[in-house]
Amino acid sequence: MAVDKERIAAIVARYDEIMATMADPSVTSDTKRYLALTKELGELEEKVSKIREYEACQRTIEEALEMLEDPEDRELHELYTRELNDAKKTSAVLEEELVVLLAEKDPRDDRSVIMEIRAGAGGEEAALFADTLFKMYKGYCMRRGFETEIIDLNATDLGGIKEIVFEVRGRGAYSRFKFESGVHRVQRVPVTESGGRIHTSTATVAVLPEAEATDVVIDPEDLKIDRYRASGAGGQHINRTDSAIRITHIPTGLVVQCQDERSQHKNKDKAMAVLQSRLWEMANNSAKDKEDSERRSQVGTGDRSERIRTYNYHQGRVSDHRIGLTLYKLEEILAGDLDEIIDSLTVAQASDKLGQASDED
Image (cartoon, rainbow, N blue to C red; front, top):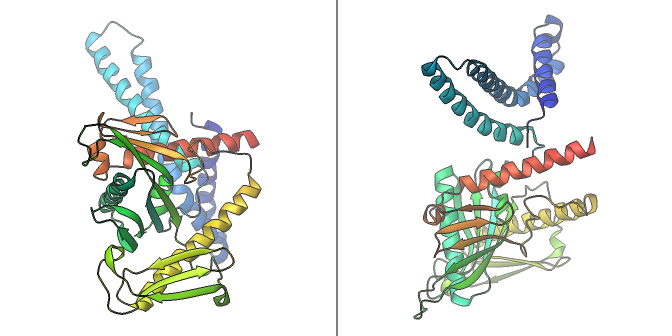
């Protein structure tokens, strides 16, 4: 999507207007107004900086094209050709960054997240794939500086994962992980397959922005809390006390459990955090459905029933079906190199939002 020149001109004009207004002594003496302008200025600074960088790049392109109109000086012609090609590449990158900056930001983007991975179709191979996805996300968290903490784990005897719930802590975690919700598909030859046949298995991923205590009010009377003993592959250890917690939210039927901590109190806190996030997500989805029942985002609904990505081991490729992106770097992606995919999805969503905003205008 091309950058909306009228919109960026309006943003720069507003930025310059605020700068001029804040230089007025009568404004600096008005604390309330001055603070409001400072806040708005802060929100515009990153956009204006990127706009000016983009406009400088456009001037470079124009100057290079002008110089290339004179074919007599061959040496200068080659120089400006290289300069033009470099500027065009830079312009394309800046244009994508501007699209993201200009789109309406999801207010939940800065939050930490709670993620759930469940083995789908494919038996033990699906469980092993769920473990592969968890390791991929852990690798990505290490690259981005996010912290991970397991809340609940149901493992298999062969090292797979039937289900895992874990927290990803860090500013902006939701903005990076929100596109991962859906069905992930793997195509590979299982370790147990003697004939070398490629099998297809699936795992589902759910990503919940972490709710704060004020986002959801839960009536204690609506909760049924069971305490039991953690044992077997479901936790990281076998407990001799009833420290595991299972919470049932009676009105919705949601069930959350945690048995990863030795402390019953900590397990309860973790389980409540998951329950709050699930209830908050349900409320957000309900409101969004009522407000926008017919619109479908370019990058998909994020529903768990939607197949979003395929990991093909034989061809060494990863394909994201929502935006038609295929990368032949399977090993790197499974090691946590997800930025190229996530950046592409971010740009696609931002472009879609800008397009919807233009249609409404």
